Structures are given as C-alpha cells and as structure tokens.
Image (tube, rainbow, N blue to C red; front, side, top):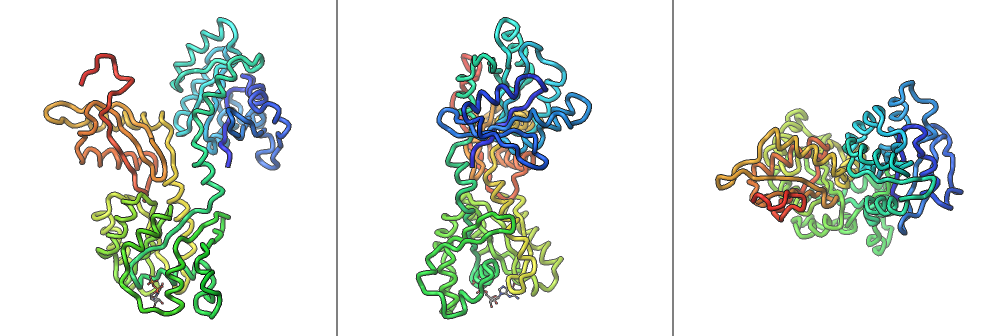
Length: 448
Ligand code: GDP
C-alpha cells in the first residue's frame, strides 16, 4: 500500500499545479475514479525514492456547499480521512484569509500529519505570507512556487520525512493479519478454529495429510481482509488424533502469541473469567499484542446477564492495562455470534496500528497536564514538556521532561487512561515511556 498524500486548500491557491509538479512525468497515470470520487485526481508520484499516492482535492470543489469554508471542507473530508499526510496549501499572494484559518482549525483536529505549504511565495509578498502563516498553528510554513518550481525539492524532502515508514505501510496490505487463538484447555479453541475455517472435515476426516498441518491457515474475512491463523497446526492435529487434553502449556501460548498481531483469548462462559484466563491476558499485554476476548459456549451459559457482568467486572478490576478490551459472546459449537469475532479482531488490529499526529497528541497532552497538574516529586514539581509517538504495534509514546522518568505510577496511569480515551485506543496495550533527557526545545540554561 502506498502512502497517501492529500493536497487540500482554498480554490485557486495552486493545488492542481502543485499536484502536477509533484506527480511529475507520472501525471500521465492520473485516473478519474468513477462514482462519488469521480472528480478526485490521483496520481502516483516518486518523492525521494518513495512512491506516494497523490490526491488533488481541487476537482471536488464545484458541487460543494455555498460558503467557501464549507466547500473546502466538503471537498477534503473524505480525502483527509484516508491521508497519511495532508499538504495544506495557502496562497502567498492573497495572504491568510479567514477560510484558511477556519480550515486550519478543522484540520488540526483530524489527527493527521499536516505540512503547511505557502504557494506563490515568490517575492516579498510571499515571504510575508509565509511569516503570517505561522499563525495557523500548523507548524513551520514551507514556501514554494509551484509554477516556477521554486522550493519543490525542499518540499519533497519534507514530505518524505513525514511519511510513515515503508515497512509499516507494506504490512498494512500485503501481509495477512496474523491471529492467534489461545485459551485454557477445553475453552473451545479447536471448535472455534473449525468454525472459522468452516471446514470441519479437515479435522475429523482421514484427509488431509500431516504435512498440510504445517501450512498456515488463511481465512478471508467478509470484507476481504486476509487473516492468517497462527499455530493452528498443533491444535488441529491434536483434535484429529484425539489426544487427551494435556494441561495447557504457557510456553506454547507464548510462542503462538509472539507470532500474532491480534490474539483471541477464548474463555469458557460456563466457567467465567478465571485466574488462568487473566494470566493469559496479561501475557498478551506483556507481549504487546492486541486482544479480543471470545466468551465461548454462550449457548450453555446459564444466566447470561450475570455471566456478562461477572466478566466485565473482573476485567475492570483485574485487567486495567487492557482497558476497553472487546468481549464477543459466541458459541463455537452452534456458530451463533461467531460472525462478530473477526470484525472485532480487525478493529483491535486497527487500534494497535494507530499513529496519532504529533500536533494532536501534544494538544491533548497540554490539556491533560492542565486538568491534573503533574505531581511533586521530592518537593519539586515535575516538568513534563511534550510527547511523541515512537511507534505503533502497539502504540508507544515517549513523554519528555525534566526528571520525567520519576513520574509516579498513578500519574502515569492517569495519562495512559486519558490518552486512551482521547484517541480511542481500547483493548490494546498502550506503552508510555518517560524520558528525563535534556529537552532540545527547553529554554537555554534549563531549569532542572
Ligand atoms: P480446546 O481445548 O480449547 O481446543 O477446546 P475444544 O475445541 O476441544 O472444545 C472442548 C469442548 O468444549 C468440546 O467438547 C466442545 O464440543 C465443547 N465446546 C466448544 N465450543 C463450545 C460451545 O460454543 N458451546 C458448547 N456448549 N460447547 C462447546
């Protein structure tokens, strides 16, 4: 999957010219996608050795609402939603207009990476506009002249620097989502896997040969997502030859979940969530995998309301590290509710992969620090300064500040919970690290 770069801004600021320049020779590849997106121009461009999908929102302006701002927003909303990076273009000759400011406000809330581009920036007027553009709060403006080609090499460098790493994008589409199903013996893992595969005979019949067990099993979700079931061979083989159910070995579970991105923890609803289940869930958390709980044997659960409540209470009290984890009630035996499982798996996977834009992250951070002041440590107030997302899979953030590494645990928990809520990160481990290293942006002389 190619990273998506969306060009947005008022009409006539030069979006299309910029689009053509960035797309270069490859502009010939521009295709009109039929349907709703008919007028959206897209091309594949090569920037600093990386292919990107460029989207020009200019074509969508015509049909949109009356106000200029309404038009800008309507034309960009869908495109921005799928953008890895947005180039917000303003007109250096016209200066910053109220619709620009309005749009910038909206854009800042979308949680996307944004580069602010001041086009038509040739001459003094352009330089002034570039200065003025700082007021939009979208970081440092990049001055270009799309028509004359000025500043484009620089812009391409900035774009390349702001794209998500290639490995991450590659994994998004080309590789199937890796899923492991773990659980205590008898929780119904094999039954569930059979159900998902829809191939009962593979296990009960004489076929297929042993070698096929080693092949990773892939299922295609209703929406086309490829999902690979990790380490099902052992489970399937065991079921076929009807070995007695040995005590589940934790190390086997660890092996399986290490290979997985998302883990389904199968829990026997007739027994409820027991210590062993929680142990496994903590293992998933420790390994940094996304998790969904399959509350199985729902057909046999006696008092469903009670069972459901018991499980959610237990999760609340004993599994705070995975707050918001999804619980899917189902019956592997009858198939009831099994269709809800894979969509939940995909949601967990998406959250696990999430990247939050640095701007949005720090606006939340400031607010969080205001709502609850950082505590005193040995009589001095902690000075937490900024936060950045170091990686996804699972979402991992680093908080920088003077003596940040001394942040007490309850305050860390407060930040994690608030972060989870603000950016909707349920059911995934969230890592928050604290670094007391010197902040490069701190005022000189420091105050530590
Ligand atoms: P595993 O050890 O986790 O792989 O568990 P199995 O899939 O072998 O299932 C253990 C037992 O539970 C078998 O007798 C299954 O028929 C039964 N079982 C599995 N799923 C369900 C279910 O949804 N409802 C009921 N009532 N029984 C189930």
